[in-house]
Length: 160
Length: 275
Image (cartoon, rainbow over the protein chains, first blue to last red):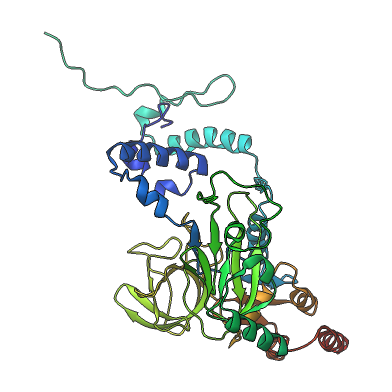
């Protein structure tokens, strides 16, 4: 049953943690900005210029990370642990603030092929589980592609 | 040592605050006060002669300066709290006066927020683990702070395991808390460190020296044989190689290289490479 209409997910569902993992940083930033706008109007603040004068401009930090550019703590040499070597490249590139190229993951099967497979796959598997009456819906086109299922026959309430 | 004694005599006798710029790279002792660059013109007698008079002499220039480990804020000046060499780093992004810190040496670790450390799990109490990081008290690690962990899907952590994580809370008033994920929820190499290997302790200064971007020791070590190392900022290093003997050699090298000169180190590496 190839659903043609995309189900729209509610905003609350999108805000749940398991949906956030796949998001890009951009969409995350947009979501955060929207939430901030809601907060900032009600946010209370002090408007005292004398306090601002007394604010010191020296910041105390106890961490060495700001002072020295240290490398990432996990290291592997000569292929002992390939995952750690991949991590090393990733983290050290981040530290040097080079442009991290969006690594295009090498695909064995291209996206188009996957889409084509799924299109036909859904039909063939669907046919297997369809009852005899519904199998009539799975007529084959001239090309051999399976046509999408017709609308299911539902009970029509008689109009007065 | 004579240099340090002379410096100490001068500062104790004078009692005058020195400009931080002039002391860069020199040994400083606790109790010294350092002036930041903007204040020199106002306070010091020399140096103001050639500069034109400022109309608003009272207003400060408001450059944000960060004082790092070993320094504290004391009014408008920096107060030294540890003995060591004073260092400075220029700001890369251009917003602020840079970072000053004291390069000191110590063995005792004090938990700092954001540091990656190696801890040993000592106890499981309810929903949290107690992890010994070498500080004054054990850090707490929640079982949900691992990648992909949920209430039903608990991480496989036993007492005695080694954990590589970072601190999210670390100050003198609260118990330190650590996690094994970053702000995006990904592990990034943190979590339980694998089987075998050897954990040993070194000074904190050595860890920073080895993790410096241009460290020759690590490059030479990496050429010897396949190995894996994990550095914790709390002075702990975990190493693993294919055989026990190689692991022990590696551990000995890393411990000894703190006190060796470059030539001695090169001799040892060439002898190892031969055998």
